[in-house]
Image (cartoon, rainbow over all chains, first blue to last red):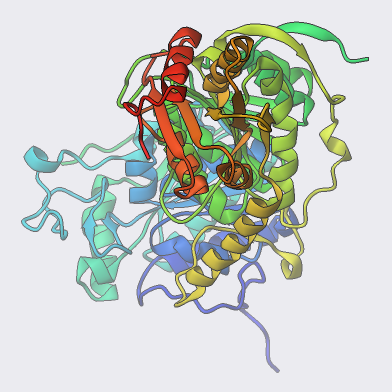
Length: 262
Length: 360
């Protein structure tokens, strides 16, 4: 007797994704879609697509979608959410989109504690444009615009978004996760769902940062890329919850300590 | 009965927008238009609307992109440098066919320029303004009362054609006070049916997408042609102008906005002295009212353009006249304001055959 153990979520369209083999975007798309489906809010969800590899997000998410200018997702989400406060509004953004060109919109939507959710994919590289340095590119990491490796002198330090935002009063929920193994994927889904739940409760600004592998622009095999997540990215970008509502019984009473780079 | 009140131009355009159903405003302070966001910050909440002081002009226009995508009547305002910052977002709105409304209370440029009245943003307003092939509908009020009443027409056209619309004013129109009578009753936007295209959250089979890109070969070209069809219809149906004393005119004075008022005064002064001066002013700068110029070009020999910029508006006059008449220009950029006396003096010279200022 056959038993269905896994199905493609109806929160995604049937259009085949164009992501590279080993890329984390596809996994995260599925998680986001599963979350709004499981919360039963597909018909009241509005998503915002970014500019970057996931520019085609409007084709993949099976909900009303809007695709805006590079970096402006939080501003667009603000406009939508203020007009339709009972909808679930998420902005899907990469590291260049969110932490570089859209840094002001990120900070100020967090400052205002807009009741929106940002799904932040951090793969430490500009993917679609061909592997240029991102604000999150690690020191020493080579890119097409840091061909000898990122240096502090030339390029400054990589930005830690969750840590940066956790210095502000506005954010309600901040968590950094990864999708490098099944257990991490389960954890990532839990984080996205929690963020959506808090938004539906009207609590305010939520952001989930997902460390994601980019084998193509890291010039690696998918397995090597996963190894790089564990060896290089997680030590600089520690996983964990950086902000959570203390009145939620899921909340850990004490703050998660942020590890210093060794 | 409509009440007659004294209003400042900036407040008039803000109140006009609210009465026309505006329920979302995002903006960033810049002189000389600050009364608009200040007014909206208390006025919109009264109507259950939203005012946001954005972190930048760029954020403000993108907040409009979002708010407009769900069908809300939205507004932003700025002055020249701030409108430059908004141009990318306006280009996105034009492509995604979002009916936003905005006002540019023009100041002296280029660069940071000054905060004096100017008409230096004519090209930016009438040629699209941002990147790509697009146009926006541009209204040019000459009185505070028109500042108050044009937003309603702008919203109607914006939603009819799904196109950004704007009021192009200047520091004088924004700052001065004049009596205002609204020519329409306040509109409750809840009477409007949500447009079919507006995002709402929907059943998967009815899901809507609003975007401004199509990477498939040939598709963006088709998109541009589709927009062009709409622009052609607007060019045909929506030009508006005012023309006075044109039947016996030896010379037509023309300008828009504040410059139009100078032309109007000069016409009145000149007529007293027996000078046969006519006057034409475009009310819409895009679509430009070509036909009236074409028609007058057949019978009037001289046209005298007055503008508070270095010969921008004159280009549309030239294109419309297409070589039919002599065109003269008086230009006062970045805070220079043409006086009635100087324009009358120049008009006399032109009528007496002085070709010194001949432009075309």
